Amino acid sequence: MRDVVRSCQIATAIALSAAALAAYSQTPAPAWPERPVRLVVPFPARGATDQVARVIAQRVSRDIGQQIIIDNKAGAGGTIGSAEAAKAMADGHTLLLTTSSTRAISPHLMPRLPCDAVKDFTPVAHLADAASVLLVTPSPPVKTMAELIDYARKRPASSTMRAAAAATATAPSCT
Image 1: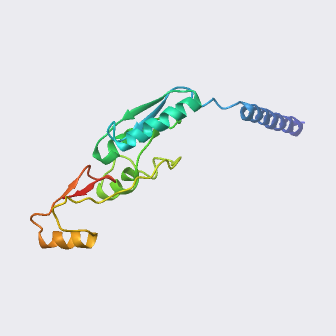
Image 2: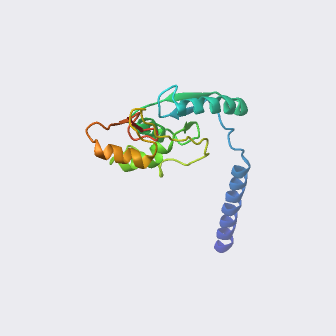
C-alpha cells in the first residue's frame, strides 16, 4: 500500500510540475520596451557618434513606439559612458552606442578599465563605418606617408602630432 501511495505522490508531483511548466511556457514575455530606452553615447554631444545615435534613435523610437533617450557620458576615450552602461540592469532598456575606441583601443592603452568590453556587453548591430585620414599642414613638402615619416625623423624638434581625443579612433592629427 505504501508503494502505491508513494507512486501516486510522485505521479502527482510530476503532473503538477509539468502543468506549471506548461503554464509558464505559455505565459507571453512582457513586450519590449516597457518604458523609454536609454541610449548611452560615451562621447560628447554633437560629435560624430552622437549624430549617428540621434538619427538611429529617431527612427527606432518611431518603430518600437517608445522614446529613446540619448545620454551622452563623455570622457576617458569612451570608458566613462561604457562603464555606466555596463552597470545598468541587463533588461534591454539601456543600450550603448560606441566605437572601436572602447572595444579595441582602450583595453590596450588603459591597464585598469572599469568594465570589460567583451564580457560586459553583447554586440547587437554594426551601425556605421568611419573613414580615417591623415592630414598635414601645407608647409611641409610631403605628399606621401613615407615622405612625412622621413621629414619628421629629420626634424624631430619641429614636428608635432596632436590628438583630438586620446585613446579614440579619431586621435591622431599631425602638423
